[in-house]
Amino acid sequence: MAPFSLMAASVSCLAKSFSIFSCTSALARCTTVLPGTNFNLVRCLTSPASVPPKRPLNAYMRYVVLQKPVIARQHPDVKIIEIIRKVAQQWRSMSPQQKQPFEEAYQREMEQFQLDLKHYQAKLTPAEIQQQALERRQRLAKRKATRKKRELSSFGKPKRPRSPFNIFMSEHFVEARGTTVMDKMNSLLEDWRNLFSHQRQVYTQLAEDDKIRYKNEMLSWEEHMVEIGRSDLIREQSTKKATAKTVETTVDVKKKAKAKAVKAKGKSTATGNMTKSSPKAKTVKVTATKGK
Image 1 (cartoon, one colour):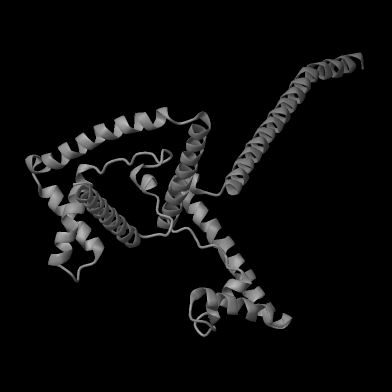
Image 2 (cartoon, one colour; image 1 turned 180 degrees about the horizontal axis):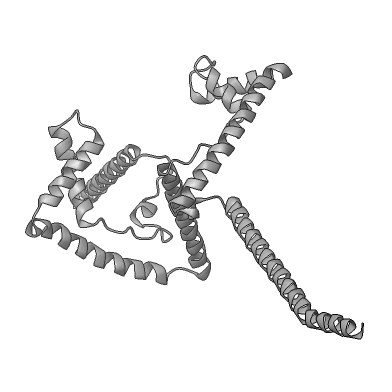
């Protein structure tokens, strides 16, 4: 019986070894399918602590995400802007009962987002909080600058003057060497450096004329902005000049008014003195006549 039990034990060990080998080979096949050479399973399963939770989409955006592919399949030749307009029209024509599922989904995810945000903020260090506040201010400043730039464009602000190289590049960009934009720009820069001085002078003169154009157009545009009550869009330097000019004009008016007042006071004083002195002169004259 001993040899038989020994043989059975060896067979079971051999089966276990085959099962282990098959599992490891299957794991190896799975890891070869996954992208990347340094794949870390723990890193993929755990989200990084430095990434804040994302704010959920509101009800309208949920409807847009749901309906945009449908309309795109129905109208394959329509542009994305027209698709968004169609989705917006559908959303406006929906009843509150039809919008309710999207609103409820947004409310549920918003509550979960607020909880996740509290947990995330509790784990932040003071340095990370300060860094996030700085990044937020930078984003807001960039967004504000973009909005102001769009507003200036909508009011027809003149374009800035071009440099000599920009004028040269715009004239020769089509026939420039290279297949990509960067290749063309590099070849144009090389050609610009190889130009003679009298050839560059032509583009320099064009740039000077463009500066004069910009200056005249900006003066007219700023005057128009003052007329329509949008002096906040004027350049800071021009605003300071206008303020200084206004102050200077006010000071001149006050000085002139003061000078007129002093002059009028002097005239009144002289007239009063003449009036006072005239009876004395008459008395002296009469006395002299009687004496004769």
